[in-house]
Image (cartoon, rainbow, N blue to C red; front, side):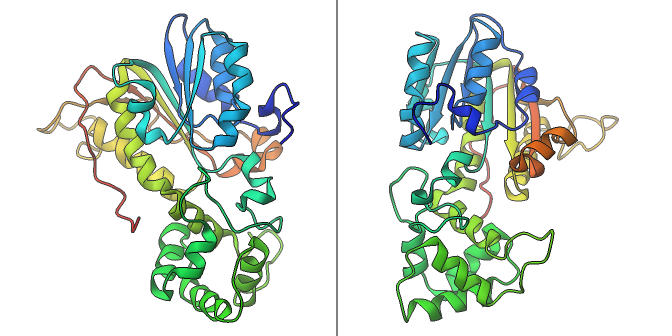
Length: 327
C-alpha cells in the first residue's frame, strides 16, 4: 500500500458503500461510527454526505497510520482510534451517543495484498494473520496446537469438511520442518485435498479463513461489538453490518432477530411475547446483496450481505450469548 495515495480506499473498494450510506442517511451535527476503518471508504463517504462527525476504529496499526491524513483533512470532524470495536465504549467514550454505526467485517483487501501480513496464500510470506500485529500468529497455532484442537478450529471456523485430514497432514509436516510461511501451509493442505477444478475455491481457502478467525477472535469480537453498538446508539440510530461469510451473518441475523423479537414472534400477526421491549426494528427482513455490477467489479463483494436495523427507545438488553465457539 503506497502512503502517497491521497485516497487509500481507491485500492480497497468498500462493499455496498452506496447502500450503507443510504441506510445511515447522514445529517448535519450527527455522530456516526465506522467500526472497521480499513482504508476509510465508509468514513469518507459519510463525512462527505453531511456536516457530521465520524468516530472510527481499527485494530490494525497500519490502518490507523494510513488514516492520519483524513484526521487532518476533516479538521475536527473525524477521529480514529486503534483497538477492537468490541471496546468502542472505552475507545470512543461510553457517553457518546451514536446516530449510526457501520461494520464492514472480515479482512481488508490491503491486508490481503501485503505478503508480509500473511493473510493470503496468493503470496508466500510469513504465516502471521494477526490484525493487531500482537499475540499468537498463525505459525504459532499451527506449530503448537494439538491435532484434535487444530481440526476443531478448521471445522468450526472454516466449515472445512476435511479438517481432520488437513490437521493430520499439518502435524506430520511440522515433525519434519517448522511451518513458518503461507506457501508452506498451502502446499501441505493441497497434498491431501483434491485438485482445484475450474470455478472452485482453492483447497486452502477454508483453512486460512479458519485460522484467521480464530487468531483474531473475530466471532466473539462481532458478538461483543453488536452489544456495544446497541448500548451506544441513540433512539432512531441505524446499525448497518456487512458480513462476508455464513458464520458472521448468522451472528448478526440472530442478534437482530432476538433484539427485534422476530425470533419469538415469526409473524407480525402473532401477539408480542413477554420479555424485554425490542431494542431494534428491522429495516430489512432479508439481507441486501450487491447488484450484478458490483459483484462483477469487486470479487470481495460476491459473498457480502448487508443487514440494517433501527434502534428503538427501549433500553439496551446488554450481554448476549456468544456464538458458542472454542475461542
